[in-house]
Image (cartoon, rainbow, N blue to C red):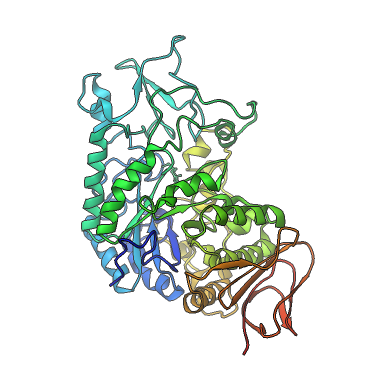
Length: 536
Ligand code: GLC
């Protein structure tokens, strides 16, 4: 079915692929409980194949108390009944493959659920066999937490456990205790987990919190980079520290080198979520540079960059200088506001998001869109009483809540927009008929059709190994480059712009907004983008 990847650097069947993130709870519900599930996803695979998706990444579906909606796993080798059964999973894999696509599952190795049997055992006694699976420490001399580390989700990263009078570490919720990756038994358990899913034919793993697994065991305080003040959100507080002891430790790479051998034997992809708040591409590139660790690393700066030429230039130039081939980027995700919302909302936000997709898709890199991006969906406003995300609920003002981007997909008009016959677990927002899949599928001018066209053009015309050459520079608000015989250009500035191309470049293959080419001059209106090829 595919090329074997050994000895090919980080290359593989994923070169040139387009990824699609499915947040399973919000995609499609097959049994009317208001929560999306595996069979719901199976029922929509033909839609993804029609759209031109190559690689489906599905968010965690394992048994979980759902404190973080599945990112708190209580058994790594099964399916939560809310999502279905292992047989449903096998059916998903088979159908994805039958339709010519690949399946990436979400592996959550940084932490388990506090209800995982390892943690239940570990917590039961200082002498438990599993005590060393997690990070337990005595209180500091003043009786407080062992150090100043903070949780991504607010508050200290340590929780005191009365029973054994020690603290345990959790970089996320107290219900998500961090595993101790310096313990060889943890390493062995995960070898088996990887093999379990590979033997069920998955095509690879998206590795959650890939920057976090190994901790510096001296557990010194993280220095502050900026002073804290009381109005800061948990995200801002987390970003105020220099995470030199809890994140991005060199031992992470050794774990991925170990997994890489197994992955390569199975022709599987290792894609890490390397979420480093300072967005330094040189740090992220270390995870892929040696070509024997992760195949691809998600780089998140493109998901946060404002619509403005200079920051955009810096983001992509720095990233591609640091890792010219092996980064991955997403337009939106289940953790952040949707792209059209981030780019200002309304018609303008939608057009900008589509234009930006042209850039993300034609730059080197493994691009992902998030379910609903192809419909131009904006994040919805979730009322305080409907909030479900623990990040929102743990913080008085609901700041940083992720529910707005997780609202279910509107499939067609009618009850709950065809997502579920039961009450959806999150509100669907006041979506219009034009936003639904069914309406856009029959409208050739729709955002959905544009994405389909763009995906097709990329698949047919872009050689994934072609070199990038910038043809404008940082002083220009048009970001433009060539790859082989293709020119890609996007106008991020505040007025129409002209760009001189060769006279033969006369064929606009795809455009967003106003784009015309005549006599070798490309004119791009506001928030416009184009792919141009030679007309001869
Ligand atoms: C990742 C996931 C996020 C989750 C967190 C903790 O960042 O994308 O949704 O809350 O890890 O597992």
